[in-house]
Length: 371
Image 1 (cartoon, rainbow, N blue to C red):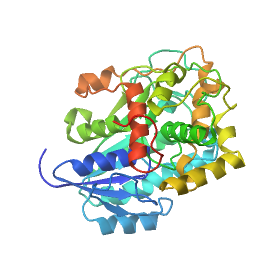
Image 2 (image 1 turned 120 degrees about the horizontal axis):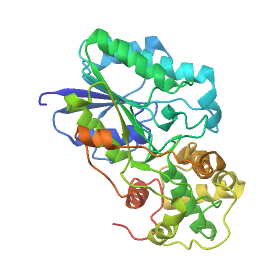
Image 3 (image 1 turned 180 degrees about the vertical axis):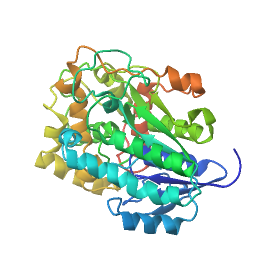
């Protein structure tokens, strides 16, 4: 498809949003507006406009949309999470708030008459993995909607209703564990692992992985998800469809940990802390990060500003809530491949690449061999 198109990326400072900003800003014929409270941290030569709006306020969203001019495409990657993450997944008021945030933005966008396509983000919680053990593998998009409270359904129903009324399409993506460079994100394991590595080096500690989990993950490079969203923006077969998406392989963090340590120049053999969250909560660790950041000129002097809630997310992924289920939550990605998007990534290489990208952005100190 050719011609001028305007992509609005809501939640642009997050893992998904920042990767989308970088990709679409490099593509011809796209005007890109990043909508977020914080300007996304991306490469300096990335050209985009930045706007802000309180997604909880319908009037503020309408004002922001009116100021943007015609928006033809939207990626919605904004989310409000509770401290510690898990409690918010069952909180009716927070679920309702996330649903209303989406409606507050989509309603004026749809009403403008220019909107052609919206990309929505879901995940494996769509299959109820956070409320009960899964009973099948792999999980497929054609299974009936799981009957549990989830803002995913509020988003999807809103998009379906307004899409039918205003003649735009939407595509739902269900990635697993996302890997990106965004600081302050609620769920970015790269930030947690990278900060842990830097602080182990700073404090003279071994880079040993907390716990004993061998949980099986499917990961998704945020750049790969951005490519999939670019494909869906042009693919008629993606209209009003739902797609699982992963890198295409499976991954056990413990098995890859020695290679990650080698890439960062760190010793992985020794006694680890009990959890990532317990390690980062120590006052001496917080102080060590501030000293490190000041000495090396890093972008963020406050450790919490880098981590967001990523330490809690890592502990969740490595904890009993995930790791002890008899049937792992694995996604079938056949549907999106058959529809025409077949790109993939090596998950270990993806994780190491994203760590290096955070170093390039000045979010982590340089460690190990740079490529």
